Image (cartoon, rainbow, N blue to C red):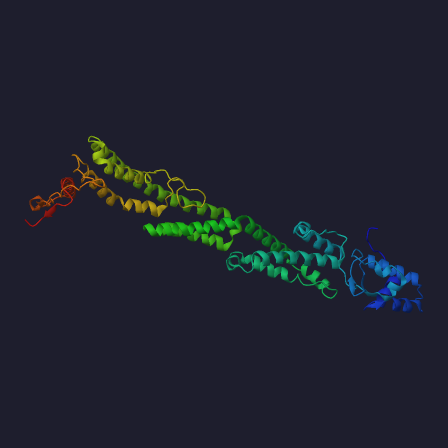
Length: 446
């Protein structure tokens, strides 16, 4: 009932074990042991073999199947009747592990969380073959995880190369367990530090596979974010030394051991996010100041134009409103970056957009200068008479007005001017020209 065999020294045991040095069927055992000098009856042979099998001292072959444990399905069939017994073949197990060796194997497998990772039970009462089969089962399970989750992906194979090395450690235990190799496999497992290396290999694979399932998607997002930030910084011409230093440190930690380095990698990633945010905030402040100034000038033009009848400057007000709407898009001094986005969630601009907007400020300044000169301070020229109604005589043709020739040579500046003085002169000229008819001709050589 307890599975402890204490009959190794009984004469019937030694005699029968000697008969089964190689496979021997039940009929031959019955015949040979019935003869002198043993003279054993069928019942003695039958019941002794059953006890030896229960004690894991015998291997049985029956119906092309091999049985190493009485707990295997179908293992009791050779003892179901005398016909089955005579057809079955029996072989003695001459080598066996000690109690302490078996206990070491069980303890090692428990340390590797054998039951949780294979779904199979583990017991100190398992025989030598069953214990080696348990080692093989766990090794195969872990190797399959590496094959399914890492192998075939060049990037993952490079990053998790330690799991590939662990797979090589387990491979020596992954072969089919047979009566010819199980004992040597057990001895190898129990060799110096071998079971410890087995546990380390299993733990490494489990840690890497778990990391891939939980964190690898985040790692991919972080790597993509680094590339996006690098593209932005290069595009706007920001010095790359500080970014490159942080990026290289991140990649080194990723390549060496991402599982143990992950906390430091997250810190380095946050440093890059903070760096990009700082650049975004600085440029956004410049952009907001520049376009805020333009909005102020737009308001000043409106205040001047509103002094005249609205219909005189209707078209100008439309242009001013359009510019005001455009400029408001670039007046966000507070930047908000969510997740792995490089685009502000408020203004929907990224760094290159902000810098481009800043670079456009001089041109926008000129356009506002031009609009300032377009304020119409007098009634516009009357429109041509409408077409006559059908059936009425057309009015007599009006004499064609000749365009005026306006000499502007005397208006050109001379000597030296500062840039602000020149801009002021240009605005005065635009204001004057805006009062001319579109058909007038300007002459600069007289």
